[in-house]
Length: 182
Image (cartoon, rainbow, N blue to C red; front, side, top):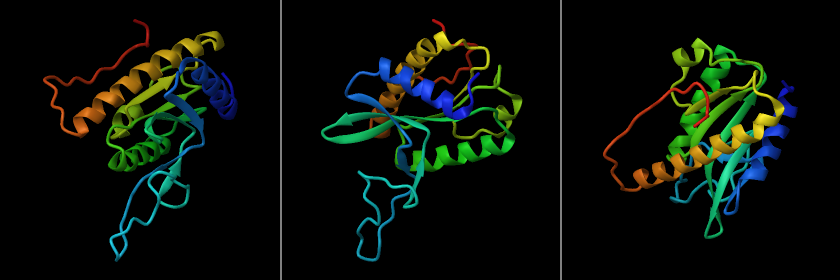
């Protein structure tokens, strides 16, 4: 499979083909991990324009939904060639921090040189919503994979937004899948 930066570019190109406005994707977008107020009770950052280094972490790819001129982050994707225990701990912590600001955000890791989700992911993950091991995915199947993944994650983000702001579902279920095939 491709090196990390090449793999991000392949995923970005595939996602751009399947996402339709008002849903878009950006490379290197910064997302807030905290919003604080100063001693005048004014925010110390602009929540509409997050900037890396100012209470914001940069993501590899991020799917946004534009609504009334505001870009709501829906799905953050981090890409790695391989995954270590340290990576799982780091990205899980980043996901947790981002979700404190954006409770409806879906956050995941896409790994190009792993054929399966490694056991260390299940041991150390606390806040990541998905992990995709794509070593055995053919280049021509990436578009289909990202189409299915992003459609599902955007839909879940929208449901999470409704729950975050007052809707109450009757049922919740977490599932592990062998693939994204129907």
